[in-house]
Length: 146
Image (cartoon, rainbow, N blue to C red; front, side):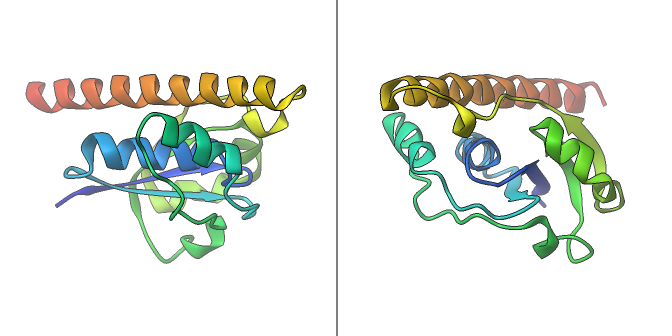
Protein backbone atom coordinates (compact mmCIF):
# COMPACT_ATOMS: atom_id res chain seq x y z
CA UNK A 1 0.00 0.00 0.00
CA UNK A 2 1.43 3.41 -0.94
CA UNK A 3 2.52 5.71 1.87
CA UNK A 4 0.77 9.06 2.18
CA UNK A 5 2.89 12.21 2.19
CA UNK A 6 1.61 15.74 2.79
CA UNK A 7 3.62 18.79 1.73
CA UNK A 8 2.63 21.88 3.67
CA UNK A 9 3.38 25.56 3.08
CA UNK A 10 1.72 28.90 3.60
CA UNK A 11 -0.43 29.40 0.50
CA UNK A 12 -0.13 26.12 -1.41
CA UNK A 13 0.73 28.07 -4.54
CA UNK A 14 4.33 27.09 -5.31
CA UNK A 15 6.68 25.06 -3.07
CA UNK A 16 4.25 22.44 -1.78
CA UNK A 17 2.67 22.12 -5.23
CA UNK A 18 6.07 21.47 -6.80
CA UNK A 19 6.96 18.92 -4.12
CA UNK A 20 3.66 17.09 -4.57
CA UNK A 21 4.23 16.88 -8.33
CA UNK A 22 7.84 15.73 -7.98
CA UNK A 23 6.97 12.94 -5.56
CA UNK A 24 4.08 11.79 -7.75
CA UNK A 25 6.34 11.84 -10.83
CA UNK A 26 9.40 10.23 -9.24
CA UNK A 27 7.75 7.61 -7.00
CA UNK A 28 4.01 7.65 -7.53
CA UNK A 29 3.87 3.87 -7.32
CA UNK A 30 5.14 3.97 -3.71
CA UNK A 31 3.57 7.21 -2.46
CA UNK A 32 0.33 9.13 -2.52
CA UNK A 33 1.36 12.79 -2.65
CA UNK A 34 -0.77 15.62 -1.26
CA UNK A 35 -0.20 19.30 -0.62
CA UNK A 36 -1.94 22.04 1.31
CA UNK A 37 -1.42 25.49 2.75
CA UNK A 38 -2.45 27.44 5.79
CA UNK A 39 -4.72 29.17 3.29
CA UNK A 40 -5.43 28.32 -0.34
CA UNK A 41 -3.99 31.18 -2.40
CA UNK A 42 -4.35 29.51 -5.78
CA UNK A 43 -1.78 27.84 -8.00
CA UNK A 44 0.81 30.44 -9.02
CA UNK A 45 1.14 30.74 -12.83
CA UNK A 46 4.93 30.69 -12.59
CA UNK A 47 4.72 27.37 -10.74
CA UNK A 48 2.83 25.94 -13.70
CA UNK A 49 5.34 27.46 -16.13
CA UNK A 50 8.57 26.27 -14.50
CA UNK A 51 7.24 22.77 -13.92
CA UNK A 52 6.09 22.56 -17.57
CA UNK A 53 9.62 23.51 -18.62
CA UNK A 54 10.83 20.17 -17.21
CA UNK A 55 7.89 18.17 -18.53
CA UNK A 56 5.67 18.06 -15.44
CA UNK A 57 2.12 19.35 -15.88
CA UNK A 58 0.70 20.77 -12.64
CA UNK A 59 -2.05 22.81 -14.30
CA UNK A 60 -4.67 20.36 -13.02
CA UNK A 61 -3.57 20.64 -9.39
CA UNK A 62 -5.56 22.91 -7.12
CA UNK A 63 -4.63 24.95 -4.10
CA UNK A 64 -6.02 23.43 -0.89
CA UNK A 65 -6.38 24.57 2.70
CA UNK A 66 -4.92 22.27 5.38
CA UNK A 67 -8.39 22.11 6.94
CA UNK A 68 -9.42 19.81 4.08
CA UNK A 69 -7.20 17.11 5.59
CA UNK A 70 -6.96 17.81 9.33
CA UNK A 71 -8.76 15.12 11.30
CA UNK A 72 -9.95 13.46 8.08
CA UNK A 73 -6.78 11.81 6.84
CA UNK A 74 -3.56 10.55 8.36
CA UNK A 75 -0.18 10.69 6.71
CA UNK A 76 2.94 8.60 7.00
CA UNK A 77 5.04 11.71 6.47
CA UNK A 78 4.36 15.44 6.55
CA UNK A 79 6.91 17.75 5.01
CA UNK A 80 6.80 21.39 6.03
CA UNK A 81 8.44 23.46 3.29
CA UNK A 82 8.32 26.94 4.86
CA UNK A 83 8.91 28.49 8.25
CA UNK A 84 5.52 30.25 8.41
CA UNK A 85 3.68 26.96 7.99
CA UNK A 86 5.96 25.42 10.60
CA UNK A 87 5.08 28.20 13.04
CA UNK A 88 1.36 28.25 12.25
CA UNK A 89 0.51 24.56 12.11
CA UNK A 90 1.47 22.65 15.25
CA UNK A 91 -1.60 20.38 14.90
CA UNK A 92 -0.09 18.44 12.01
CA UNK A 93 1.69 16.27 14.60
CA UNK A 94 -1.59 14.49 15.33
CA UNK A 95 -2.16 13.59 11.68
CA UNK A 96 1.31 12.43 10.59
CA UNK A 97 3.65 9.73 11.86
CA UNK A 98 6.83 11.62 10.90
CA UNK A 99 7.40 15.34 10.41
CA UNK A 100 10.16 16.66 8.17
CA UNK A 101 11.27 20.28 7.86
CA UNK A 102 12.62 21.23 4.46
CA UNK A 103 12.52 25.01 4.47
CA UNK A 104 12.72 26.71 1.07
CA UNK A 105 12.47 30.41 0.23
CA UNK A 106 9.11 31.48 -1.21
CA UNK A 107 9.61 32.21 -4.92
CA UNK A 108 6.24 33.98 -5.02
CA UNK A 109 7.79 36.74 -2.88
CA UNK A 110 10.64 37.37 -5.32
CA UNK A 111 11.14 40.94 -6.52
CA UNK A 112 12.33 42.11 -9.90
CA UNK A 113 11.41 41.60 -13.51
CA UNK A 114 9.35 38.63 -14.65
CA UNK A 115 12.56 36.96 -15.84
CA UNK A 116 14.18 37.48 -12.43
CA UNK A 117 11.09 36.05 -10.72
CA UNK A 118 11.11 33.05 -13.07
CA UNK A 119 14.77 32.49 -12.25
CA UNK A 120 13.86 32.35 -8.56
CA UNK A 121 11.03 29.88 -9.25
CA UNK A 122 13.45 27.70 -11.23
CA UNK A 123 16.03 27.81 -8.44
CA UNK A 124 13.49 26.74 -5.80
CA UNK A 125 12.06 24.10 -8.16
CA UNK A 126 15.52 22.59 -8.61
CA UNK A 127 16.19 22.65 -4.86
CA UNK A 128 12.91 20.84 -4.19
CA UNK A 129 13.60 18.23 -6.86
CA UNK A 130 17.08 17.56 -5.43
CA UNK A 131 15.69 17.27 -1.88
CA UNK A 132 12.97 14.84 -2.93
CA UNK A 133 15.47 12.68 -4.82
CA UNK A 134 17.77 12.65 -1.78
CA UNK A 135 14.89 11.74 0.54
CA UNK A 136 13.77 8.92 -1.76
CA UNK A 137 17.32 7.53 -1.86
CA UNK A 138 17.64 7.77 1.93
CA UNK A 139 14.26 6.11 2.41
CA UNK A 140 15.11 3.31 0.02
CA UNK A 141 18.45 2.73 1.76
CA UNK A 142 16.79 2.67 5.20
CA UNK A 143 14.22 0.13 4.01
CA UNK A 144 17.00 -2.11 2.69
CA UNK A 145 18.73 -2.05 6.07
CA UNK A 146 15.53 -2.99 7.92
